[in-house]
Length: 161
Image (cartoon, rainbow, N blue to C red; front, side):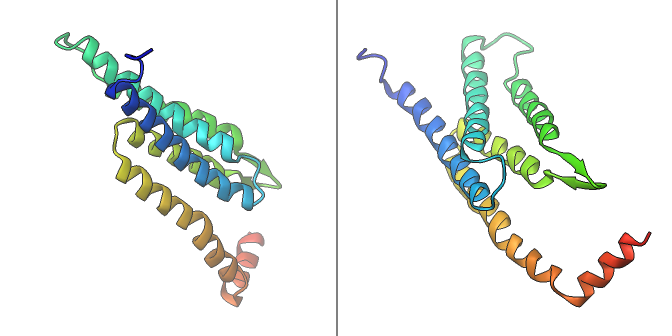
């Protein structure tokens, strides 16, 4: 058990915890916004992405010198997989797309998890802050814009087409 908590293992634990924390904060905002996908989903997507990155790095160390081994292949598949996951939360209601923000939030959460997985903690925290800014501050700005006459007029024009 003594070797289990070596510097390498503590680094992996830190990377996973950073990813979980960042994803959790983004999910917390989604809960406050009364969305279906919340803290657990965002935390799992971020941690899963970090985990795949960590696995990629471990495989490179294991198979160093073998041609054709590239950890970015696994990372690229994360983007595809999360895109598929995001597609599941997008649905149409009365010809109006729903769930786009949740889907893109999950996609960003995966990127944050990948950054944490590579040990890029500053990028993880900055991206989390910016994502929360987009979810919270820009939501408020959008709500204010929807109340303006210009926005109402352009919506009625679009709805009549």
